[in-house]
Image (cartoon, rainbow over all chains, first blue to last red):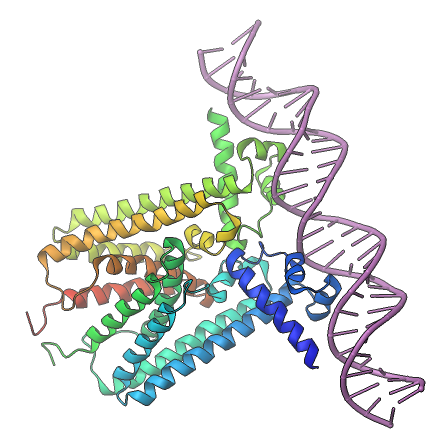
Length: 206
Length: 206
DNA sequence: GCAAAACCGTACCGGCGGTACAGGAGAGCA
DNA sequence: TGCTCTCCTGTACCGCCGGTACGGTTTTGC
């Protein structure tokens, strides 16, 4: 029903912010229900245990993540016909989006789960793995299109190249948080963007 | 005294493995003392609270990290006179070292702390920040030497370029863990290595 | 052999994850 | 109007955990 979904969403909102700041272990259910204005029984009506909360949280995060990627790169695709130019524009748009976040990227739930593997069941770890594989497929598709048109200055494994996008984003988030420099992440993405540009720039052998 | 240090080290060993697998919140002191074969009183004799355990853990991890970097890149420096070749060899050695870890990289404590910021005091966060800054200085120094000899195909902010090393490592660890593919991390480092090679390869304008 | 270091044992506190279960308010429908 | 289903509230309870307090004991270095 309507009301139930609304409460559930509110719990997830509060939980997501808390988990990204303090981790799963550091986030108490009691604190979540206090901030949500709900009772303990109410919480356990929506989620059987903390594991199920994590699962719902992760699924929602991944969905939202995919939506953002879809928007950015489809917009880039609309503006640029060339697959390389479109990809480079997408990275630029992504960098700008992240640069506009006032407090920087709040953190990636997938990364959080990575550092908690033993705390959750295999299902959650599998969801996490599938998310990373989806990222790989997404960017691999883009690189495949680019390779159909351009000759790279060096040969790469396409999957590894595709993974590099996720690597830079995840690593950039960690570094941004460690350094307390929110602008580090968008900067790293632009560095990667330049590398990609360089890779497909016609060189002496072209 | 001798015995005290030994016990302290044993606690830190057990704690480090546990924290990297379950996070700080997911690691109980009771489980640490059980595995170490020590009593609760004994634990609190060595560490005032969990925060101090985290501090000691982080400091030790960073020291060890620095030692490994020192070894690898000084060995590379001995083998190669050219700063670029030396840096590229260092990345290769690092990749091989990580590739030889049977279960993959156990995880970076600096990254773990990032995702727990609100759980620890400012001192720990500052230690974390200084660690990331030390990485930046280390690799910035290498790039400075390279720039003194080579002309890059594209201009970069040297700090951002230096940060890219840490970004790729941290991101590679996350992706490796998420994908459950230990070989992903060394692979990503080699991709980055190729990018660096590309950057300083003489092109059409050279 | 003596003092300091390095513990052990025990008892206790409050918070937290989780369970159990009874009950109630409100919406939708017959 | 009454019935049912969803969406909760309230209360009581369990065991684990972080942390404190404190007295006692063994080990070590000198």
